[in-house]
Image (cartoon, rainbow, N blue to C red; front, side, top):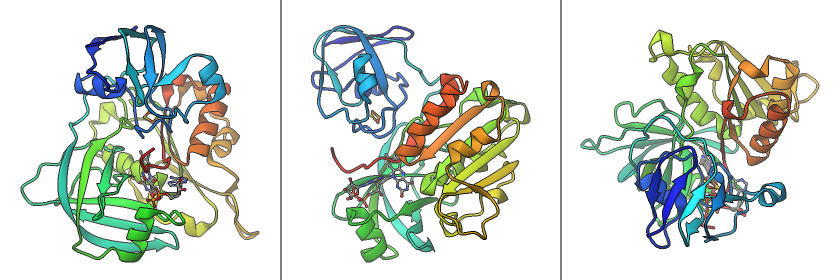
Length: 332
Ligand SMILES: Cc1cc2nc3c(=O)[nH]c(=O)nc-3n(C[C@H](O)[C@H](O)[C@H](O)COP(=O)(O)OP(=O)(O)OC[C@H]3O[C@@H](n4cnc5c(N)ncnc54)[C@H](O)[C@@H]3O)c2cc1C
Ligand code: FES
């Protein structure tokens, strides 16, 4: 079996045909990841030596990434022993994923194209997750799509999701057309490494969200009120972007941990007095000392990519930028 060694970390074995990411997670090595289909680039790494094969298109890589020798651990398999270049490793273990049945408890239309979905877990289960993680929802027809958990924990065995309609989408058609309270569904999770790190302690913390990207942000800010005082971040600012005021469908400013909320609209009419354009620009316009910020971004891949490029270029250290891009999750 190929042996994979990380330049700044441990080594682990991969089974034949297993992806580098799957082998790492199976061995308890916490590589950053999200989509697992080669689209978001969260698991980007470089190979210093050895041979590997891409099992699917690495569409999350920019031409410059490819030119620099980057690969995506979620779709790469080792065909010889490998040495990976330095990667960001999570310093905390993440809960193991499980597959569970659940019932659709309620559906609430909160915007033209957004539903708040509540799921009810069976009484016997112990579903543990970290705020910011997502689940894979398995619909009655067996299709799987990823949705972030919008709650800090499973209160009374209930979970909250924020679902945006995608035109012609398989699960969108289910949620917005056929879903009925009490439908029997399944979930697989928790998944992903988009969780608050201990280094937010006492530092200014910024969240950038677009659309339903506010879901994991809500889970994270709600959880902060339960953190020990000494570990809590400094001021917490949330920038949330949409097209019009109706897109900002939940009162994120009501979360006790939020010090400042900045709504940012890209298609507001003349009556809008607030920030216009895009969340990453609104943050830059506020001209903070980026070297001190911890930034967590979630939502469209266009926002996440642009925020990462522009903030790093303006002085944000790469290790202080974390993101979850809501890329398409249909099987690649
Ligand atoms: C880690 C992660 C977390 C996510 N969390 C959420 C969440 O909390 N809330 C939420 O609403 N969505 C979330 N998504 C996106 C979600 O998983 C689905 O992709 C989305 O709901 C569309 O599913 P569908 O079955 O309706 O459309 P599909 O049948 O999968 O696709 C229909 C068409 O739309 C395109 N498409 C699908 N998804 C997207 C997308 N996200 N952006 C642009 N084009 C797309 C497809 O390429 C296809 O052409 C998340 C994605 C990831 C990777
Ligand atoms: S590209 Fe690998 S986790 Fe998204």
